Image (tube, rainbow, N blue to C red):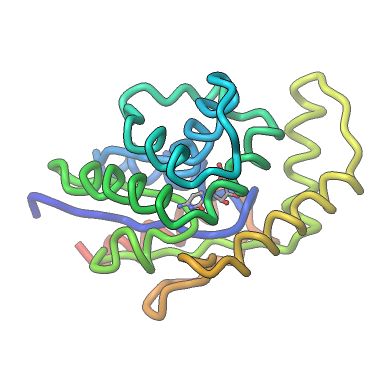
Amino acid sequence: QTHFVIAVDGPAAAGKGTLSRKLAHHYGLGHLDTGLTYRATAKALVDRGLPFDDEAVAAAVAAELDLGHLDRSVLSAHEIGEAASRIAVMPGVRRALVEAQRRFALTPPGAVLDGRDIGTVVCPDAPVKLYVTASPESRARRRYDEIIAGGGTADLGAILADIEKRDQRDSSRADSPLRPAADAHLLDTTEMGIEAAFEAARVLVDAAL
Ligand code: C5P
């Protein structure tokens, strides 16, 4: 096949990013973490002192985004994720970013895209769709362990509250809410390590190749 797309969706901290990177590497595909596109838009607004409640302004900034220069290290801050989920409710912002995401997906030899609406909106024709989820408690625990391993300090209860708030905002918005596509394979990683999740995903992708 000359062109192949794997759509990976799910809530925050479910393990989609790590799984998507491994899949892209294994199958020789590109990888786009679409959350970074929302994060980069939010950060550009902050950096330029622009308002967060003006959809036309946010959409114009989104339209100028260069997907080739998304730096995870400066975009991973918690406050930027929070700000991203606020501008992600704006249809004008989503239109601009989805257009760029589709261009990325269509670039040969294809790509793994991960986010919230890849299987439902961005790439509804993707031959493989995965919906990666895990209980809010285990997602909070993973985030917490990551921060502690990185030498930081964290409050497990506060992380859990944040995750639940973000789930609620992402699932209840009118435009492209977080939900599994009808033809998505559900992968619940609550009791699963990354290797087991990767093996399960690989079986599903191989079956579609
Ligand atoms: O996945 P990540 O935490 O980086 O995403 C940040 C925010 O961007 C999410 O909470 C969500 O509101 C938004 N997002 C989205 N659609 C995507 C990817 C991310 O709305 N495809």
